[in-house]
Length: 106
View 1 (cartoon, rainbow, N blue to C red):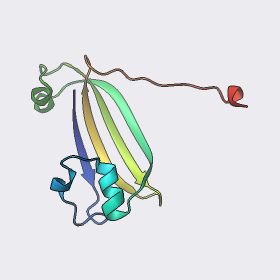
View 2 (tube, one colour):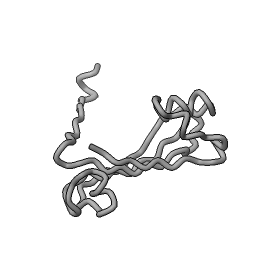
View 3 (cartoon, one colour):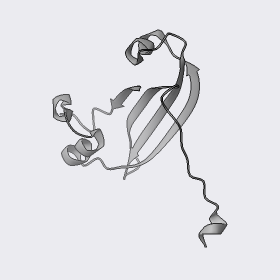
């Protein structure tokens, strides 16, 4: 359904071990091992034609529709610690959002 690349700051998690993630969450691991607590993220999303390198991994033809996401995640101190690039198959992913008026919350 998706291919995701996560790049972490080496200075904040110098002894990162990918094998420790075999059955867990990246953010849970970073919190437990390095006291990195994710608090905010900014991401851009756009529909694009899938590049060849990701198309093969996703099992779709080059140029097939994908949702391309770039995200920067920051910790509780406001430090950016992660850059993520994701490719989601356009035929298997639905973007869902709940929109609420501030006036209705009073």
